[in-house]
Image 1: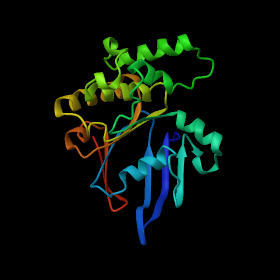
Image 2: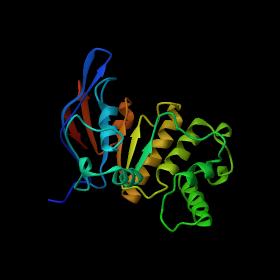
Image 3: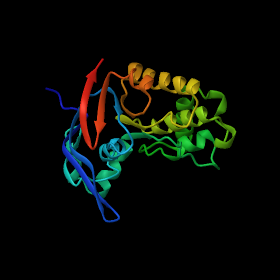
Length: 228
């Protein structure tokens, strides 16, 4: 059996909210193969974002393990974690673009590819923006872009370091339904044509229906899984 690109075993996360003990994850086992397109669904508070943060090494579990390409994340030091995060493409609901930078500048800023000079970074940023359909908008700042265009910039930025997989937290939550369909069509194309392993958190059943796999979370547990 091949090594999965992502695997979690008995993943648990507990924290205190004031004096209240919250069990955000209560023993999550998940296996994601290279090239998968996985949708994670569930109500607010079900543990979806907590799970995504664990997979992306943005937070540490209370118990259990996260393996990325067979590597136990808990064994990595700060430098190792930083290297790992550069291999992950993050796309968030609120875009998180830097207002004073152009679309091209936002994509260039995150590049951490050794030996890539300024000219090469600029060229790669332009190529990525063309990939997401923004060839004519490279010089525009976020305030000059629509919500859908800003999310396309965020996707281009997430691809800047040739990540091993994409983690998307409600990527269409701040855009209209028509633009949402366009964004997801782009994500599906990246998955099919580039083989980009993708995990997306969503409340939208229409988006989830397009994923190869779907897992339903409730109260910190995976309660159901479907494969298309």
